[in-house]
Amino acid sequence: VCIAHAAMLLARLTTLVILLSRQAVAFAPHPINLQHLAPTKVLPLQKALSVTKRPPIDEYSPGISTDLVSLDINPGTGPAAEPGDIVTVKYSGRLLSDGKQFDSGVISFKLGTGRVISGWDKGLEGLRVGGRRTLLVPPGLAYGKSGAGGVIPPNADLEFDCELKGISSGVLAELMAGLGVGLNARTALLLTFVLLVSWLSYGVSFPE
Image 1 (cartoon, one colour):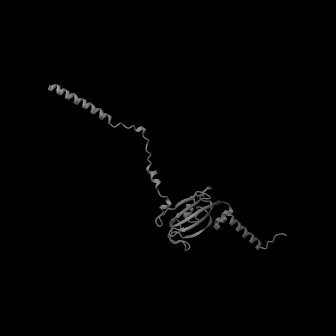
Image 2: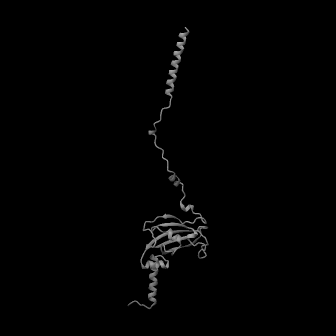
């Protein structure tokens, strides 16, 4: 009887172990097929940093920065200015310290020849006709320790808004560049008037 009872108990235990094993298999986590997962896009470190990088013009520090900084407001569509070109520029200049405008106008000069401050010779290169560019110029590329004209103090950081009106060549363009005035319709009209007055002042009369 004892042996039969033990055998029956063993059979029940065996059945219980088999049932528990099946339940464990049923609830076991299934393997994940990674091939069906969409790849996660990760930005390269350099690209990720460039998203939040400040533009160079915002990094300019008056009294500290020594490099010229430029920002194209309008790239322009005409030919690009190169050293040796006679350029006509409409401009306005301000002190970075207080934003006070000290000068504005139109000027013609030969680019890259030292007729203007170094900040202009370097900063206007590559600007296309019709384009506008803002220049932040440190003292070392402007008027330095001496300042200028009593309106620009020593060691002043300057800001210029420049628009390239045209690129010209020839004898008349060279003359206008030497005088520092722009070669445009207004200048041509003024020259015509001056020549006419000079002609009449020498007693030249029109034929009847």
